[in-house]
Image 1 (cartoon, rainbow, N blue to C red):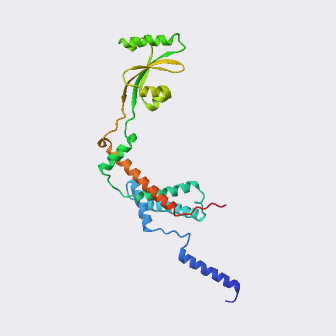
Image 2: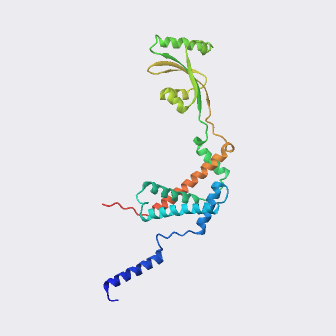
Image 3: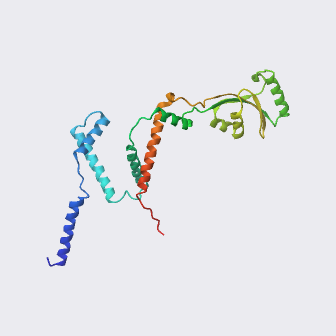
Length: 258
């Protein structure tokens, strides 16, 4: 073949044939028996019965449409520089790594160690049952009024009969801080139960009593075993995923242009 132009097109056609035979047609989508079986299974799982031929044909038509759109998006490189797709693909790699973690049943010793080292996950929140009486500094002689009230209490008088409002509640530490502020709430949580104690801030003199504390006790393993098993295995799975992710990261070289 002496014509250079003809030779050029002949070589191009040959390269096209070779590429097609090696890489396959980029727009050829193979509908395997596995695809149809998967569509049948999904239909049966969703509807509780196998699909009719017409329903299976419609499901297959929908699959072909979505697969064609997916392949077209890849050909146009729409998966690049899209943060949503980037996150989805990264999450799929993490999920695949999680599936490689073998199932196992932790021993009682392992569960006891986990429970002891993570008490905050299983303890009921402590609740502080308190009450307080306020003597505003804006009132006349708040110190004398508090002294009088305190003497009445020491004489065994019922505080409900002494003519001043009693404010209190049975609250966990978080709500207690929100209601009383940091200083008074910390004071309440440190009080020994049962005694009225004096407290003062910028605006008021107070008498405060901690009636009791509930919760804050670590349950036994028997009481929380299912939660402990789930938490321990979840932590191990996360550690395995983290190791797998780090191994993938180390396969790459990151360069920053000068």
